[in-house]
Length: 67
Ligand SMILES: [Zn+2]
Image 1: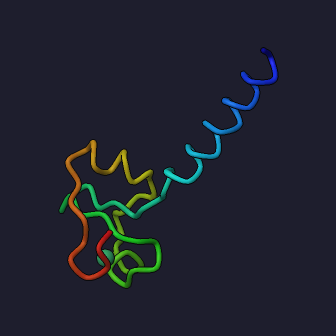
Image 2 (image 1 turned 180 degrees about the vertical axis):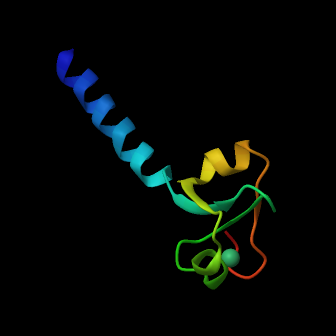
């Protein structure tokens, strides 16, 4: 029984890692970018956060890179 529990935890962690995607979020324009987007690299007030967190804060994906 314990082995099954461990297996489930391992599976959950794997899924969590896959879904945890970092984006560069601009709190002023509320637009988030992929890390390699040009707009993200020149953005001075941007912060690096989880994509889900950016969406939770009302963020929209960048039109150029698609977030
Ligand atoms: Zn972008």
